[in-house]
Amino acid sequence: MEKTMECPSCNRTTNTNDVLNKYFLGKNSNGIPFFKCEECGNLFYLNEGIAHPISRGERVSRFVPIISGVLSWIIAVGIVWFYDSIVTRFIGGAFLLYGWKCMKIGTWGTQKLIDELTLDKGVELSKEAAQEWEKFRGKWNE
Image (cartoon, rainbow, N blue to C red; front, top):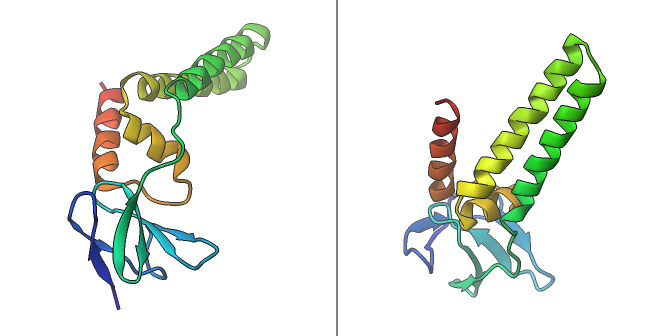
């Protein structure tokens, strides 16, 4: 049976079943379950059937994906410069593409997208972040 509750941030109905939920983050030591809203991606917990919003205690700096991109470009140039074969050129190209992806996210991505991509491991993106992610994927193909 699917249990639902309104998100305290966006007031949209979201799934609060801790067994069959891909947005379930876990329980704390007191057994209080934590969830991420399917729509807006904000975090909340349930205490006695009431949803309470929480804020992220941590934020990822925008420079993390930018630094990853620059380091990937340096590795790619180093691989292609020092090793001359078709395999290393493909490996260098993969590092170049990864670096470009990191630079685009770090430069034009919203803070919410960066936080969800880096902090919420094992949990799917919210619908807002997924829509923004699809916009970036469309830009990469141009």
